[in-house]
Image (cartoon, rainbow, N blue to C red; front, side):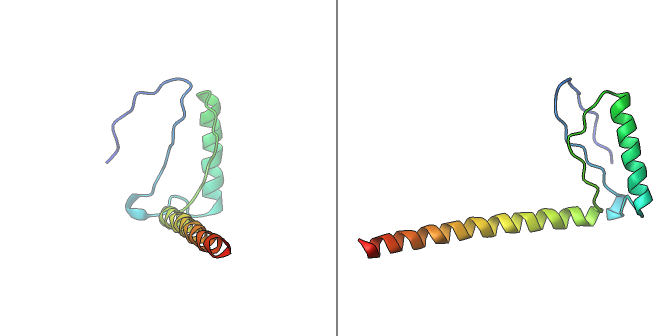
Length: 95
């Protein structure tokens, strides 16, 4: 079900996402991706929009990428905490 239309204001940044129905891929081949990018460029020119970034991913891949990114951030955070604890222990030993 589509979301209700939002009030659009000038000079704002918006995040736009397109997903396949029932987790079906939107792009079946590279020519589909190329066609989408052509349409995006035409639309941006027609409506005087600036596209800051664009990522074309399969629906399932998006969720996997977000989960992996979150796990990597969590691991990095935990590693920094562990290193901080080790540094405290070592500073106490050296004192």
